[in-house]
Length: 102
Image: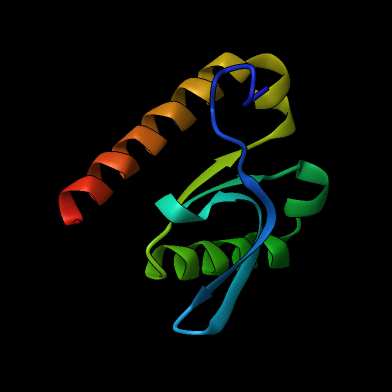
């Protein structure tokens, strides 16, 4: 889906670290741009404990300088084009920010 939209392939099951410390293993990432895409299926992310842990984990990723995008299998099935549009926009914004910082 991402490749068909011209989006560079992300690193899958990427381990994010911050100052050498483990932050999270994410579904997919563009580490050079500090962008993460997580897929949250209801089956694995709906119980109260996981719900809370997902928010703590996301805040840790943001604290490590990552932009975190979240999607669901339903969005992938029913609005893949919209999701791809969002990913393109966020990756472009990250590239521009990186170019300004250099």
